[in-house]
Length: 209
Image 1 (cartoon, rainbow, N blue to C red):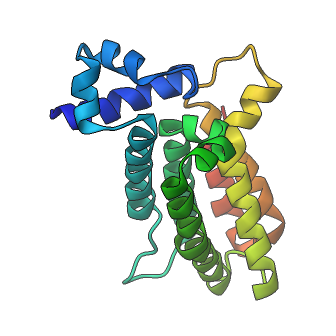
Image 2: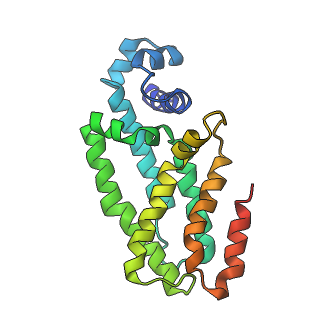
């Protein structure tokens, strides 16, 4: 693996384990067993490393949350989207513990993040909910779709930080994602049509811990 990629990969691991603020470029270099000068050859500062990590996050989200082009969505796709979304939140969780701080220190990151949420993520969520409504999985009109999409994003985005706040002595794990997925399903439940109650119950059972 190239040094550039190793720096990005190991920085992500360090940030997730210890938080981003206490980790310096010297810590990263020491962890990798390289000189600070070698690290600075690839990245001028920590913010550039974080930005590259963010680009990996974007690539993951764009790949896993895209809407199929040649078929309509089915209820099982909701589980696929939940798995992908919470896997991303777990893999890149440090970014969402202090997202406002990261964005305030990195103008390029801030611009790209807000553009992604506005121009890509928001429309994808709205399109998915619209298709779920079109097949009769959920009963929802256009005015209800955008607020539900926003609520879903809020839960997914802040789930790990929320759990860390209310259970400070309980280590986070990938199983924490299951609780978050069930919380999102609770947002869907009032809109699920009778014909899909069994399919919805199967989805809920997937995330029983």
